[in-house]
Length: 120
Image 1 (cartoon, one colour):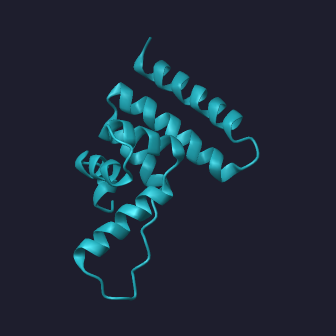
Image 2: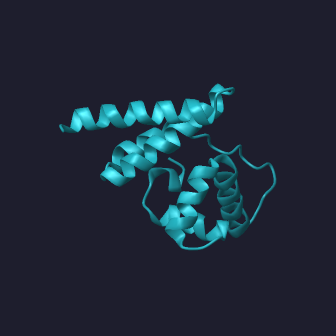
């Protein structure tokens, strides 16, 4: 099977699965689709495409009006990341980290070299 055919088949499968998983909410369906497709692309070794997909949903946290220390700011970024990803992505990064601790998942994500890990 050619790469284009494999990619097309993967996109269609992920779209169908996302619609089935989230039949009533378009926003959740989009997140589900991107999570499913991202996982498929990671498995295919397509890290650039995977990062580009997640940039579609990326939102930068609003600047904090209070002066905070760097460790506090880092913790806020990690919490914002955790709260903004889908359950599927949480499971993925917890699996990568080999733990059930969200902070470890964040460290695994940040260590992955993803452009999202440094604010895109």
